[in-house]
Length: 116
Image 1 (cartoon, helix red, strand yellow):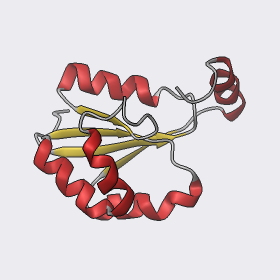
Image 2: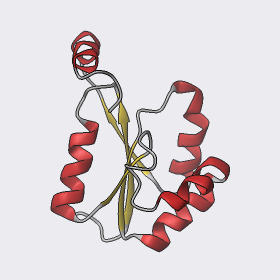
Image 3: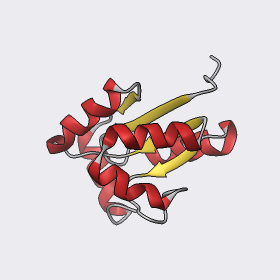
Image 4: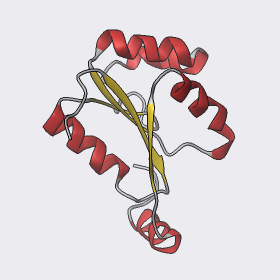
């Protein structure tokens, strides 16, 4: 399957299901800009976009399209932020959900020390 030239993907799902690993793969092998939304500023290629993310998700998507052809957002969002995810998908961001065995994911998450 060919990767589109212009795309924004949101990787989300169960903790410790290798979302960040897959995001790094997309960045390294397919030229995606990788935004780890939980690791600001270290995980943001353009940290100046954080203020926009915090205030206007539609504008954030527009800025991503302006700055990059391919973007992968890595965010294990809490359910209270579902409306934010809906805003992103309404603007064409593609959501990929990582499922996994909950007990095993929790064990892996705790072994690595929680959020990176």
